Image (tube, rainbow, N blue to C red):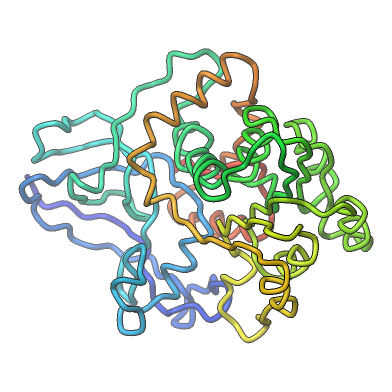
Length: 356
């Protein structure tokens, strides 16, 4: 293998709050050119094609190995000088791995870069172009991939949702939310599904997917609307956002209510504006069950769940396709700007960057 060079975005400064897009020394990221090492045994050289944009990347950047006990870290922290890690669909360019030949597409943990070297274990699965008309390969990153798996895991294994349950799902127009809404209403058959999203347009989209009603959390009447929609209280809250909405929902759950703590994007900024839960006492008085979970613990079920969701789509129970993902085309130089859109609510469904 000849010497390979690659442009890559590295972490220049740990973020305090949202990352700073500044090409100077104060910026969170820096674009550098690195010389890649020789391929080792069971390693592949890959070219990222589609990058997954995930709020959790903010957590990886904010974490520090020095401050995080290994048993508490579900993913390796990104330290200053490290390439920015991302899940991606990537093409194998060169290989020292018997099962991964050049030209194969893999889904794995790579980086914001032109080229990257990764271990075989970090190539979670290989991909082929879908044979189902109307589905793109990017569905394996979202609705038929980790997003769908997360929603399925949270509803079935974490809160054991049933047809007798009423449920509120925050972040309902996001990658996990759109699948949680559809699984809850159209597969499990929950008796009442309430979505929460950030615009009236997104709310109508979520209702189209199956929610009985969807509420705009940016509306001046949101708190009153939520109280009205949950006037009989609800059994389950699928939490994708944390923060103020979680605090409000602690007062809208029935006794013995269950919370699937999936995400906390409202708290990912890691700044001084974060407040504790004012309604935490309700966890005690109402005997609420709150369980955090991570899809990494369920990855062994990915093929099985993907097939279940694909079959549900074939039967017309759920919606998949272009309307359940947002794909931005970006040059590598623009990748950090595109990624930050996820914190602005600029997407419906899974947000993906196609590197051009």
